[in-house]
Amino acid sequence: MMLVRDLFSMSIHNLLLHKVRSILTSLGVIFGVGSVIAMLAISEGAKQSALAQIEAMGIDKIIVFSQRPPINSRSESSDNASVMERFGLTDRDATHISRMDNVEEITALFDARKKVLKGLQRTDLKLIGCDYRFLEDSSAKLEKGRWFSPADFRNNANVCVIGRNVKRKLFALGNTDVVGSTLRIEDEVYRIVGILNNEYGTQYPEIGGQNDMILIPMSTAKAKFKDYTFYREGRQYKITRVEYDLFLIRVTDTQYIDNTAKRVSSYLEKLHSDTKDWGMVVPFELLKQREQTQNIFTIVMGSIAGISLVVGGIGIMNIMLASVFERRKEIGTRRALGAQKSDILLQFLIETVFLTTSGGVLGILTGIGIARTITYYSGMPTVYSLWSIVLSLVISCLVGVIFGTYPAYKAAQQNPITVLRSE
Image (tube, rainbow, N blue to C red):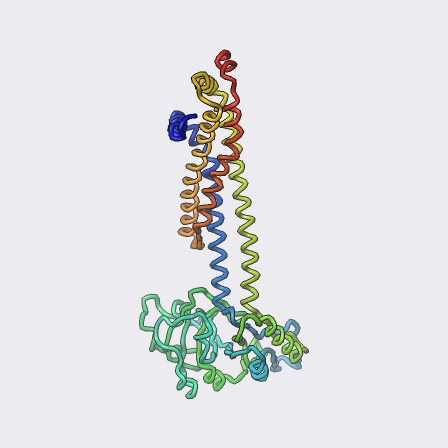
């Protein structure tokens, strides 16, 4: 039996004699492995991005928010009649929920529902009253300046901390001296003391993202606006009364967060039985559901990409069978000179495995290149892990073994006398 080293060098020599055919034969595996790497990278990137956004909401929190009831009961007696609309979370709700087991603390947010203008154009920015703990309970960080001090809450100070998008939308592009400047909202003037940035772009139900908020102390908001919002539509005045727009309920133990959420929901259903003027989001539950969904998505995408590998393997087997027929004279001559069937089988098997393995390496590089290109042009995060690269390389080797065994077996079974006589 020939040495494996000699068989390997002979196999490489035969492949190099037909460079174009060898490259074309490997294309199926190259694109198959490349698609596997790219799809898994896209899937993993989307998964991590989605999970990071959910985690930024706080997996140890229950988010309860006020929402306008689906059916509003309003009495309108004349064209100038004022309409009172009251809904949402109350101070009584906060007191009761804070006494429940497994509830550590509650951070409240209040939407003042004031028009924030840039010139004469209304923006989508929100004026929000918040508790002192909001910075700690959110995933935001201060880019510049400071957070509210206890004195700001005691004195109902006219100070604000603005989100990153607020700076971009209300101030000139080159203006770097935003902290310390003032901001007028309707009849009130606020001094900017800090700039907030949430890199995950966390969005809260009904009140939007932190980067679009103009935050003021809760005591300031309550002292100036009470719970009322007055606005006019045509000749009609309308009043909205909402005590709180959102509660961030931090739990002591996430293991029992489901039970805590059920107790909060049961309480609100009883107290707000007349109207469905509240909603609830549990980030921990969203996280588990999203993980399950993304895992299924990854399996489906990997399976689809794996089909292309199978197709590439069938193409290699077809080419190798044709190669056996073309090289019958070579096979017969070697057998007549003393080569064993196992030598012929190993030679053809080495050729096939080399084709698929080299195709796998090129496919990995192709997949990484596709993933980086997608990230560069679309901004979509892509993550290629070590396990997906190793798995793709192992699968490409197995494809060579599985689809190369039959052609190698056919080559080894050639009868040297019959082959040389026909040639």
